[in-house]
Structures are given as structure tokens and as C-alpha cells.
Image 1 (cartoon, one colour):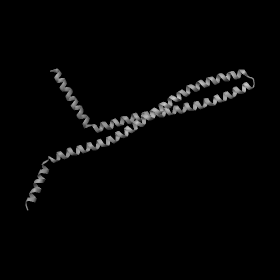
Image 2: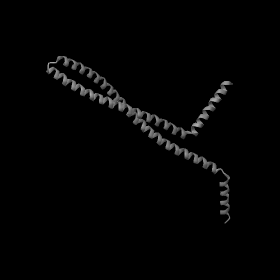
Image 3: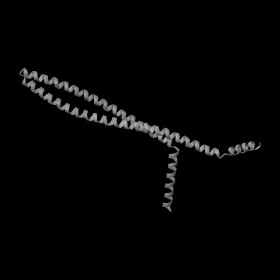
Image 4: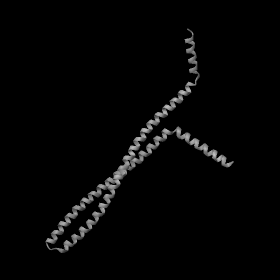
Length: 175
């Protein structure tokens, strides 16, 4: 008996949930669209942050390239002047800068890949948001039409229409 009551309760709950979903479908659709748009804006903010970081890394790479070229020129001058000690220090500094450049290049490559993936995802989501908005417009139209049909069905059952039809028949039949 307890299982039967539990099954009936679950069935009633499911019907009530479906009825509430049907009743508030338009509001639910609008809320889901707002939630997607919020996530979309957040992802766009993340993309902007990644792009800013990418620009910083690119400038750092340019600076490193300039410093490496400068240090290479100085090492050449040191060798020309017979200053092996300065040339050795310059070579060590160049090696350190090249290691840093390698790390920054890898970071920049990863950032570029992340930005490209995120841009692609944002484009896809944007298209889906547009589709959802169009679907919501269609759903609203269908809902309004359904409600109008229901109102017409209720008004067609009123005695006013029958009384008007009787009066029309009476007047026409009076000839």
C-alpha cells in the first residue's frame, strides 16, 4: 500500500511539474536565455583578459629580442676589444635571455591557442543565443495564439452568442 501511495505521489508530482513548466514556459525560456547571456558576457570578459595578457607577453618578447640583439652587439664589441671576460658575461646574459624568450614564446603560443578556442566558442554560443531568441519569439506567438483560441472557445460557449443567433434568425424569419 505504501508503494502504491508513493507511486501515486510521484506521478502527481510529475504532472504538477509538467503543468507548471507548461504554464510558465515563456518565463522559463526568457530566464534560461538571460542565464546563457550572463555566461556569454563572462566568457567575453575572460577573452578580453586573455587578449590583454597576450599583448603583454608579445611586448615582453619584443623587449627580449631587443635586449638580445643589444647584448649580442656588446659581446661582439667586447671580443673586438679583447675583453674576453665581458664577452663571457654577455654570452651568459644572452643565454639567460634566450631561455626566458623560449618560456615566453611558449606562454604566448598557449595564450593564442586559448584565445582562438574561446573566440570560436563565443561565436558558436552567440549564434545559439540568436537562435534561442528567435525561438522565444516563435514560442511567444504560439502561446498567444493558443491563449486566444482558448478564450474564443470559452466565449463561443457563452449564451450571448446563442441568444444573438436566435435574434438574428427571428428577425430574418419575420419577413
